[in-house]
Structure formats: structure tokens, C-alpha cells
Image (tube, rainbow over all chains, first blue to last red; front, side, top):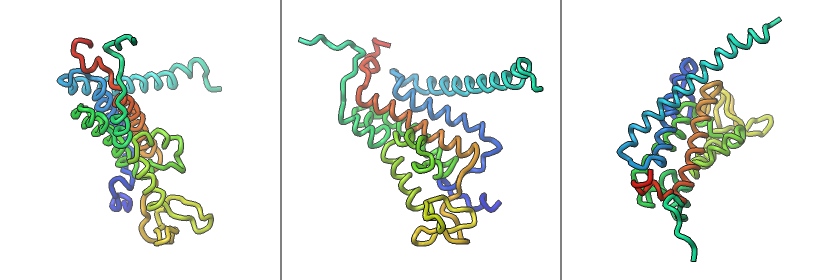
Length: 83
Length: 165
């Protein structure tokens, strides 16, 4: 409670420990915003391409997370069961 | 006589390269691609300061997180200025070891920069995932800016020719 009251933006950390995984959305958007700024030839397509790339990044990370979960929780215990 | 460059071969723009190193997006801006320059500045600086917003100034630390700072330094003088402020204005000198460190939650900082018992710490050290992600934001900002710096110095011709996609 004390830390929340004393919060100073850009100096103290945000209390986002319970929702840290949501931070991938603005991260993906920032990456797409910058990368597409130099990659897109026709700037009328820029906004659409940023949205598509942001969705691709978040989707790919979600799939990688799901694959890691399945590998560690279900596949590996069958191959190498704990003694 | 040298052959003509292909439509996709880059031409070197040294002024844009230097400007891009000084401030994200400035290279494209002075090179005539003003919208791209603004978008690059918003993206790179947004990620860099977004990382600081998440993890605090603790995520920019050339002493304790040196390898990460190599990536963050690619943002340019902005990253070095933030790191300088962190090291000299926020960290405290440990009275016992005389080493720089972040003040503990129950410590303050006197005029000489030495940690004192009681008072408000200059900053709170970030930990766990919040520190990881804040550091990652700022480092990705630097790595993206490297691509932008190279693009400003050697802009691809095909981007300016609608006939070549």
C-alpha cells in the first residue's frame, strides 16, 4: 500500500505482477509500429499492416506458450516420468 | 564506367545516418520522409519510455544490467542520459562498502549521495516479471532503432518506387 501511494511514473515500477502477460500487447504494437514505419512502401496501408503484424506477434507468442505448456505438462512426463 | 545501380540498391546518406543516431526518427525526418520519422520516434521512444513506465528507471542500468544496456544504448544519447541520471541522481552510496546501489525502501539519500536511514528512497527497485518486461521493452526499442538507423543511412530505392513492390 505504501508503494502504491508513493508511485512516481518512470521512476518507480508499476504493480503489474498479476497481469504481466498482458504487457505483450503494447509490446507487439510498438514493434509493429516501428518496423512497419520503415518496411511499408505505400503508407496508406500502414495502419492495416501494423494491426495485422501486432495480431501475428501476439498470436505466435500465444501458440508458442501453448506448445511449451503441452510439452512440459503432457509430453515430457510421458517420455521421462518422474520416479 | 561503372554499371548503373539496380532499383533496389541503396544510396548512402551520411547526414541522415548521423541524425538517426542522435534521435530516433530524425534521420528519416531530415531526409524528407517526415511521416516515417515521426512514426519511428513514436515507436522507439514509446517502447523505451514504456519500459521505464513499467519497470521504473531501474530497467536502464549500465552497471548492474550491462548486457541489456548494450541493446538499450542503441536508442542513442537518450539512453545514456537516462543511465547517467540513474547512476548519479538516484543510486546511493552504501555507507559500509562505498559502492553504488539502489536505496532500500526504508532509506533516503543525503546531499552527498550516501544512503541514510529513514526518508524516501530516490527510486524503488523493480523485481521479477515487471523488471524483466520493462528491461525487454527498452532493449527491443534499441534493437529496432538499429534497423531504423541503417535504413536512414542506406534507404532502399524500391520503397520509393511504387512500380517495384
